[in-house]
Length: 179
Image (cartoon, rainbow, N blue to C red; front, side, top):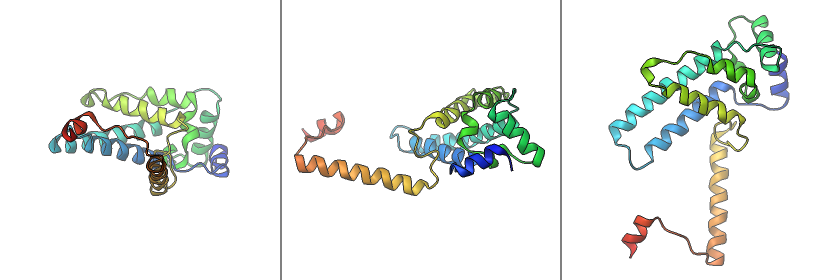
């Protein structure tokens, strides 16, 4: 087992990159589905595009060959030395993608011309999520638990607003309907 994998497991770095990518894609699809603007037929098309972009992102990560002797490059060499068929997306977590050499190697992967740059935007956003310590959904070990924590936090804030009779600003359209 590679040194980065051992380090990641010792530090509790889960989920794997592939699981985090699925979480990231699901969040993006849910955002499109609930934006209130996108039509149903367009939502289905957008969801399929997101799946294609996620697949391309995983191909970019698995095909990346970081240069140098940084932690990502060493970990990949160790992984491939143990098992040439091993995939980084199944073996590594967040810290692998946070390595600048790995991120650069992923970005060097040729984009799919049929996706009009959507795959590049998806990959860039996914790589940015690895560096974003506040992203509690993409990199959650248990998404249901993370969503429950967010729900509990919103409930607590609502209870404080009710107790202090703090006014809540309505959406301008809802306010117009209410008036």
